[in-house]
Image (cartoon, rainbow, N blue to C red; front, side, top):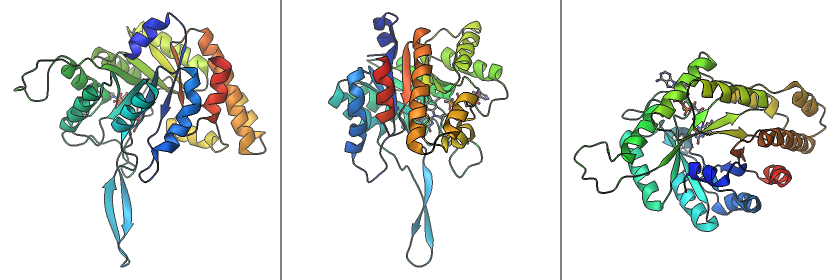
Length: 318
Ligand code: FAD
């Protein structure tokens, strides 16, 4: 079912959802299931599955030389979605990236998604490859998420990349896109970034999922500003429970987000990461309760491969 239909059917009730990361090549999918299993009691209507950018790896040739190869370390997003749907009878949503894919390859992925019965996709540009200083569009690929949304909308309207396809059946993907309450790191201002978000919605996006944030005021302001410029689609808040002390540096560095002083103080007072994990859980419970009271359609959690803390949070809310 489409995410937008789940929201309609909930009649104003806040629903639970979460995001998982495919296992690294060589790992067993059972590890992923072990993290999903404890969260199923909270009835998530959907689970998101991320896609990773390709990266360079250096293989030891044994003669003192290294072989430089490009590879995707966590492949299998669409396959994992199919297996999640099959195993848990919930919707699974693949993240599709511009970076690393030609438009042709994206079309093939969308055809696979349709055949597998996936009703939703999240359209993203992707970050720069680790070896690149900034994002470079793949040759023959989409440059911005709005272009990818347009490609999916075209397909929904029976328009393939090549005109000579005889279309007997249109697709009907529900499309999610990313939103940034503290603006995307490359954007010169929040106002400009919101204009870009509007472009994605105008191209056909049906809902927005936000980047993690720790100050609900930023989310509420973001939603207000989005509404003021005519973005009417649901805006689902993304929540990441802080889990280790190093997150105090890593999260602002990687995601260009601010952390509230009271959270920083509480984490700095912790003796070890077990205590930090508990602080993160308690903070996320309070944050989630306030968002739920404000009537958000979903509380969407970034599990990042571990689910015990999400389970502790969800058990207080759902
Ligand atoms: P865009 O919407 O294309 O925006 C990128 C930047 O370009 C912004 O600064 C925007 O303001 C600007 N911009 C947009 N359009 C134009 C234009 N026409 N001209 C000039 N500037 C423009 N990354 C992954 O690799 N895999 C994932 O699975 C993944 N999942 C994510 C899920 C969520 C909910 C979120 C919030 C992020 C996720 N990301 C993921 C990270 C995401 O790929 C990065 O944040 C990326 O840098 C931007 O992606 P976007 O889709 O927001 O890009």
